[in-house]
Image (cartoon, rainbow, N blue to C red; front, side, top):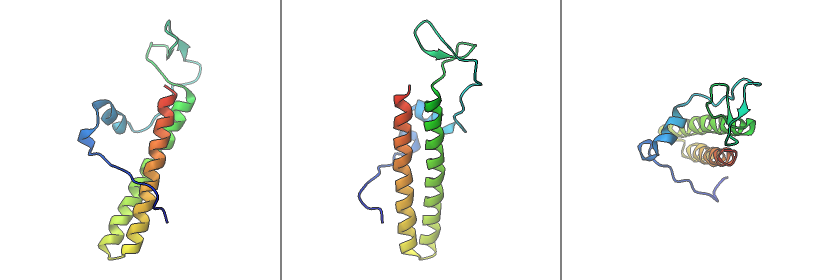
Length: 115
């Protein structure tokens, strides 16, 4: 049983617009290899001058996206179990969803450190 943590979820509208934009992106994929150069400020940019991030950044974002999908699945299963009066299963699924939420936050924080 997972019980030594708490997660505070915010409504989507309460997030800054940049966070909402990132949540709307379907996937975080790096640019094709060989097209990344360093600009005058030391930033990684593609051939058109658009800033890109390290491979680790994209790996962490992909990991966070996978945790978000699992979290949503567990919360959906929790709701279904609750509606079917399977309270213990609902609690277990909810705890798993919260755990995936924490893992998602951790992966996003690691990605931020790569910026």
